[in-house]
Image (cartoon, rainbow, N blue to C red):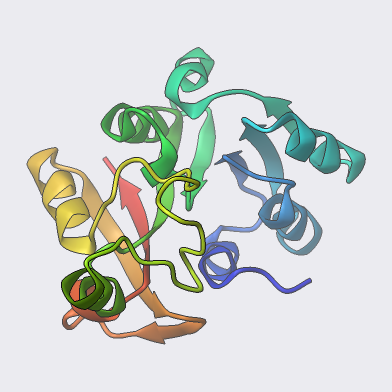
Length: 195
């Protein structure tokens, strides 16, 4: 199974045998890979009932829930990793969701589209319209994205809260790019965080 590039990075860096909560897990692609290749005890939380059904049909432990409200029900440090992939920008209170991730997971993986990527800037500057790209294909009125975040915004947010970045990866398409000027050059970012 071929994973989306940010999910492949996460899958490669989750310790074998870990306990994982995948928040916004979709139909469980990452969970299935972690279960089958790394013997991970993976659990999922997903808003879409259709995706929950697909994940459960694959034999995955997924419940329907909302990251903005339901993470509070998990006990502290109940997982080795809490994962939020391409979901942070769709939550109503991303700051609170991130706090909850770091409360229930000893570490947290967070990936998101970088809204400061040069093609997005170019589209806004020259076209004056919200861009659609291969990684952000929906028009402004149809997107789930409600909090546009940039790599520099996220780094500042983490620094203000004393959250430690263990590692970070930056992607342009499926290829990794360097941290140098990542806010301008990267389409997506993946961060491994801890308190």
